[in-house]
Image (spheres, rainbow, N blue to C red):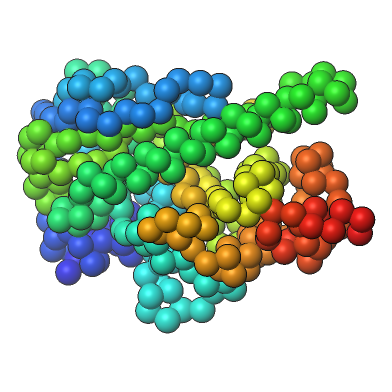
Length: 314
């Protein structure tokens, strides 16, 4: 099986269609291509939310569907998951949850009659475009919004204590879950399939945390650390990516959560090793809530062996 669009070569060779078929279909089409209805919109506007303009039962007509080469980082985790399945070695055991491993494509589309673009997240195989997968992604985003709100509040209060400077913010791009009512692109998605729609304001994507090869980004690293610390290790963020507008803030898209329990539970040993690899060093923000951390080998209360609170006297 070939790929659907060139930007998705590594992901889509297991799914959509023969090489170039979707690209040819998109290039030859004009006018409306997708008619969607919002069937799930659980994330309310709030201080840690980059809001979505669509509401429950809204119908959305999209045209100009296209893939962007700059969207590659959106699909990195699926490419790495396939490498792990084929035997490639990583410094930690690759999580084998559906959210981490199920291949998706990310494309942009224009709202009919406007110059406004939205971001589409679609399972690479039409047969896998089920409601339960959309709901799982929405649940992860909803929980990360709450974690981000708590983190933003903490660092804002810390900033006030040390001089009142404006603190950076973590925000989550809120998706809505949509049912496909009509499609002129059956190679991509079909009637009664389910996909996600984001109001993502950038054509660029920055990979903050995924496999430990990223450049150190203090705000995303501190947020990653804070969630593990605040949940006593029961939740760990994974695949943090999105926009870095240069203001100090970050905007996250499609973050994953590795959990201790539930149908998609990940072993503590997997999370612990991953934490050590993904968060080797703490910045100043980390020290504001975990002052006992000395190095990546110091243990902490959250249950991950890379922190300082399990042995606060050290």
